[in-house]
Image (cartoon, rainbow, N blue to C red; front, side, top):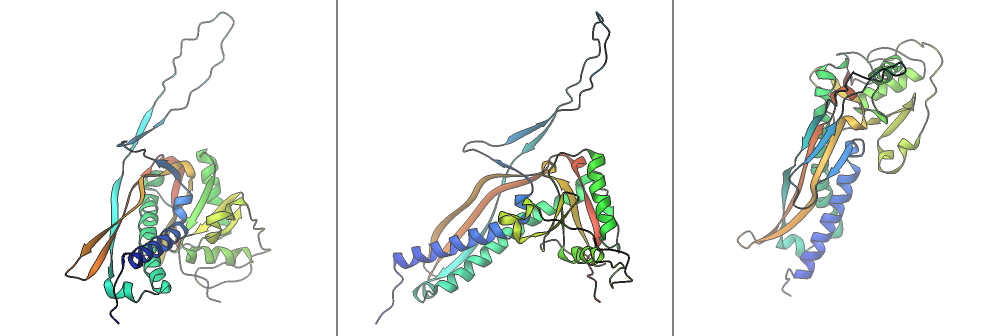
Length: 296
């Protein structure tokens, strides 16, 4: 019996691929849940986000005119978007022999690719926070004391809450070891005292629960495996306010099918239109720590 690729089969394959891809993209990009989000309406080219400077009140005597004028000090950050996309080829043979698990694999791969792209675009902004000056240093472990330094930085900066720390899982492993009374770079050293009290908060609810590690001093930490490790086994995360970074989106996802007869396949083109931006570099700082986990 001759097998044919019907329109119904193709529509079903497309539905499975797209539904799986959208789920994967949403659940593999923690940074999207930790920054300000903006949506460009249809026909809108850009969004201007204003920031007003700090005013100073003064004491005045009875009947004395107020002569000091306040400078609004307004600055504008302009948010625009650009397209990011991929092409998935669904051959006639693949559609004819369609198994749902196969289509989910295709969708998962597509979702992973889009998730990594958006996540990496946002984490690339870490290096510009705090004027490009990182907290921490190469070969330094992200231990309990160093985490409190990150929290204190945010307090001194008077950054708006909520605050959060995002780091590579390898860096967070050493922190976990230090809370149980161990210290040292790479290998756990001698005990240094009683373990710290690590709390759980609402930060571990919803999508972010897959990335939540702990909360200390009211500041949750999230692990992000998309953050890269450099040649020295160090990794750059960040401590930042939600108001420090922004994600602007014009089109979440748009897909189209184009027939390629000579290839005997249909091309599924998947496009997202977005941009990432730094709103205020004083509301956070990059955090450079060793990603070499404790081994013993």
